[in-house]
Amino acid sequence: MPNTAIWLGRLLVLIGIAGYAYGMYVDGNASLTSLIPAGFGLVLMVLGHVSRAKEPLRKHLMHAAAAIALLGFILTAGRLVMNLSRLTLSAAVLAQVAMAIVCLIFVILAVRSFAAARRARVAS
Figure 1 (cartoon, rainbow, N blue to C red):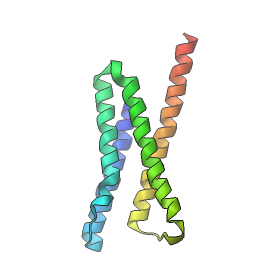
Figure 2: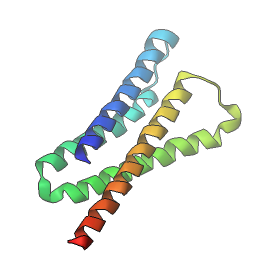
Figure 3: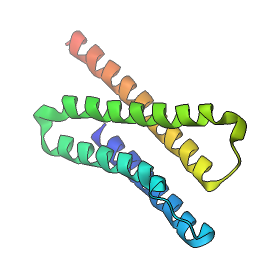
């Protein structure tokens, strides 16, 4: 799970940087809010790296990463749903959709991993 956190964190950082670069070079109006996915991605990456280095803390850190990803999904999906009537196909909307999807994928994978670990612990 730590490797998943690191790779999906990298993907979120890439989404944030791409959104900022698009705003800077294409629109000429880059907003710092376009870096929000990068912030979530950095947190996931740090939690992934630390959980690899500190084995006893892995369970707690991966639960924290799942909580961060769930928060990222809820915030972005909620914002998209609230503005559903006014949405246009823009870079900002695409970045929000991408962030929501990446965060949801991480949450699903984390829940599956936690359930499998619990089943393995009970079976032993």
